[in-house]
Image (cartoon, rainbow, N blue to C red; front, side):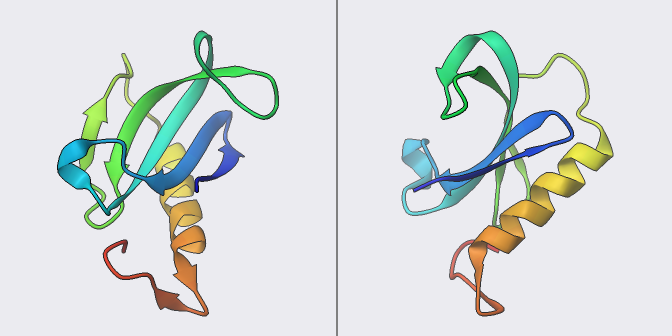
Length: 95
């Protein structure tokens, strides 16, 4: 199950990796509203800008033409940590 939040105009989703070489791991997907992409619960379409590995914060994929601003990345990481922490204990394999 994915958790999502709008941060600085971008949709951040934290959930199971869609990549076959990352089975059982969690990714952070940073998405922007576009004419093409997945339709979310708010009725808008979003396409992925960047995918980060939660365990290392390494960029797995970058589809964005520019650089995401630091405040967007910082907020995405902060949100992912809040989602992946249960009773202040990190979920194994995530952080």
